[in-house]
Image (tube, rainbow, N blue to C red; front, side):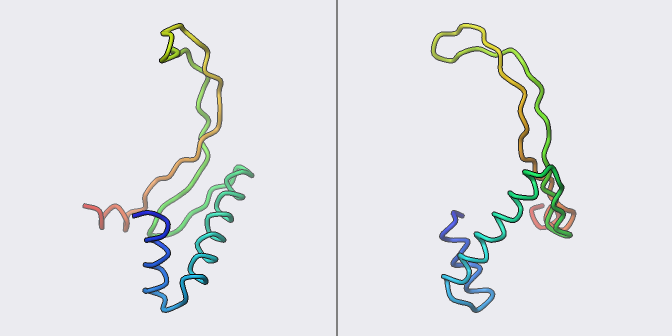
Length: 90
């Protein structure tokens, strides 16, 4: 499912216009992103938890040249599905 299909599904389920569904989805994604940027967790009971994890610096290889290189430490977004979502997927 891509973003356009998700917007269609939201509009259909909520019985709202696609433009309103797009605004709601964009606002949700922005709010989650802003909170993660601050280092906070976003917990949606029954769906899952969005959090920020630190990835340590490590050694790697340049895929084009094969030469060793240092990969810097960075923060990455992480999602852990909630029990209800995990049960649905099974």
